Length: 155
Image (cartoon, one colour):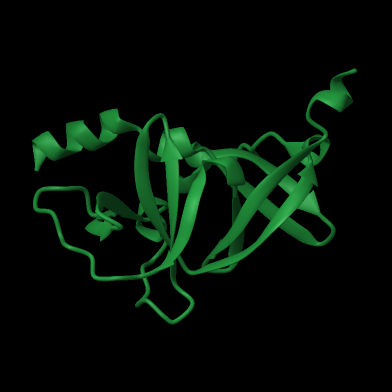
């Protein structure tokens, strides 16, 4: 009976450096090219600023910076994935938005217990699809508003 409830999950796959990450498509509002980002003073380093997206002011988070991966200059393939979680809409800067895929829920394993990897706290699970290894990210942890507000007050 359990297999009929949620056999597959639809994911947006994107790339940061040489790894592939994925987020559930139901949280994705759109994928945009990088436009002018207005810097906001006294915010975390990984918060690049805000953009005006069709009349909505949207905060932009650089996932490389959030995960502790060295930053790179934006290229033609750099994208902003607009996500919505708990009534909060933000954009994630990623190196490349690869594709949309359906994967069996059964192929998702718990996150590996790796010590010393900063991004591990943002991982929901790992899916092996053929030779690909997709890292499923935990949107709520990335958007943990407590960490935003406490760090804002320190700066």
